[in-house]
Image (tube, rainbow, N blue to C red; front, top):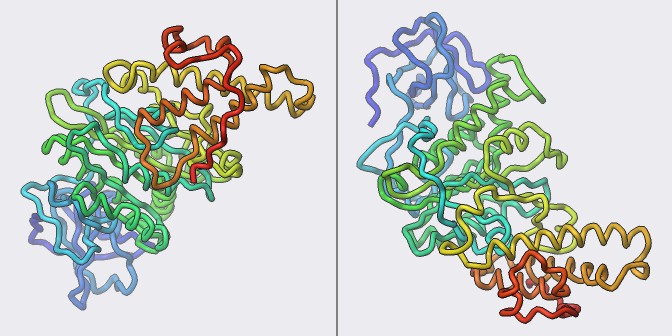
Amino acid sequence: MTVWGEIEYTAVRELRGPLTVVEGVSGVGWDEFVRITMDSGEQRNGLVLEVDRGTAVVQVLEDTTGMDPGGLRVAFAGAPLRIPVGPGWLGRVCNGRGEPIDGGPPVFGKAYAAVSGSPINPVRREPPSEPVLTGVGAVDGLTTLVRGQKLPVFSVAGLPHLELAAQIAAQATAGGEAFSVVFAGMGLTHPDAAFVRDALEERSAAGELVLLLNTADDPVIERILTPRVALTVAEHLAFTDGRHVLVVMNDMTSYAEALREVSAARGEIPARRAYPGYLYSDLASLYERCGKIRGLPGSVTVMPVLTMPAGDITHPVPDLTGYITEGQIVLSRETHARGVYPPVDALSSLSRLMRKGAGPERTRLDHLDVAAQLLAALARARQVRELADLVGQSGLSATDRRYLDFDEAFLRRFMNQRSNELRTLDETLEGAWQVLLTLPRSQLSMLPAGLLDAHGAQETGAGNVERGTGE
């Protein structure tokens, strides 16, 4: 519970966008929670962004419409914004500040925690070693997500990244252990917010989901708070209640743009593409809150989803995200144009921790070998396709033509699945074997002979594989 100071300040110098400048303050610190009372008695909340020689800059969490600087009373809590934490969040739908929008009562908890949080101490981190299976073949088979990992999804406008994020949030499991999902939506349109609620309704009803929805017409300051609330809730569910928690954050580009807007309102000197110079450290302060802590139960795994403006992977948001995280899943316009869902560009995607969480005693004995062979064959198939564009298919060797068949089978039989289809890991890997066996045995040099014999690999290959539609 927030305990407010006895002093209320009335010397509000100005309102500047979402910011309120209060003069004559004392004993006020950065990140303190603020209560602002208007003449009408209506109350709004804020956070201290900056304090300098008795002047405090407060960001208002709601909008500043109707606020008169001459009629405001400002009180400081003496502590950062704190929220109740615990299993009471499960099954609830809230806005980006954690206030219920599902018609239910406020969320209660036995303990409170500051939403600012802090990154996990590297000395206390436990190395990741177990998978989080998403039910999406392209992810589980080739870029396996590991408990405690940070694995972003890079997309562009018009691609089904929200559908993929919702599907993963609806289907992900931790092998039968206690598992929860926290979904933080930022800058969503109202139709997108409704889609997410519908897609995750079953998991929410089962008491396995916390849903935070910040829509595009909500105050921009709330967007900055949303991922922090999500991670604070997730940390308690994981490290106190012993759950494995997946935090899905969509769209981190909207978050970064909100950060840029607030930075501009504060009059800060802009850096690359007008983003604040502290964008890297700000993103790191979020992403590094995930992981496993030695001696504590549970884990927090983070999957940030972000759109690359104009498809530019060197844009500051994906560029800096790539420095902090452990791999990426890249969605492709070309694959989407061919009618494949999810449109993952397998050769541009990577999970750097996959070898820690997949393979013998974790997923399946042949998993890593099959994944490596799939990617090697796909790289060769892409080269053959480029060659065919130059000389025509009639100029290709018989083996090269098999690689073209493999490329098509890879997209239609391995990658493609319905947006509500839960694919087990065994189904994913057996589908991978069917695709690989379209190639002659001599081309499968990365697979042990014992595995090839067990799956009946032929020197002539299996020829064309019937094309599945995934529909």
